[in-house]
Image 1 (tube, rainbow, N blue to C red):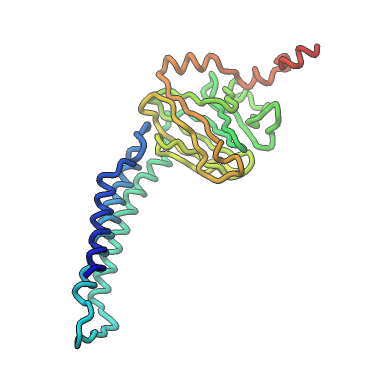
Image 2 (cartoon, helix red, strand yellow):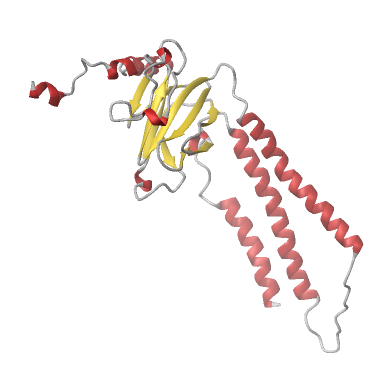
Length: 275
């Protein structure tokens, strides 16, 4: 009796914790509400199964508890029960997978009007590249990365000369416009993750991965690395700032292009002092 009661308490406590818990997802700041919906569907399905299984265990403990003179019945096979469990389990798994497949199809289908930006991760900071006046990013390669070219932009590609370079600073984006985020790593595995965007993706050396999203509200949102990338991993943080169009254009005018940063006349303060 005590064990059956404990199992019932576990079920009731789990449901109450889920319903009354103060911990929930961060407020969403992009178009990926589909991801929250998919997780909620998964919670409902797994929650119902968990409840039924535990209550069934409590029933079995109570119904088939030891009694003097009672003998257990041995039934090695039950085709009807096995078929029923197989079908119900299959339907449950399909119900959990189907929404995820639909969301994934949207997640990898980037709108034609999306603006491409680039994120380069390295131990332990974030660098960004935005298209310049021509509206497109130039070519880049990790093998071209050096002290004067931290994002490895191809100097021979004319399209890259007007690219906006943001080195270890905040990334600004305009509200309401879709963005395709191209992801590169300069050294080890990283993962670009902004919880409010509901979008994240691993960054692999030698590969370019991507995701896309549309910002839906202004604000400042923290970037986290969701892949253990070394001793400085906890400190690998940055910020994405979603601006109004006016504020974004004002910020953009203050940034430097790759051509400006690469200009031989752009001397450091130390170099000027030495002269």
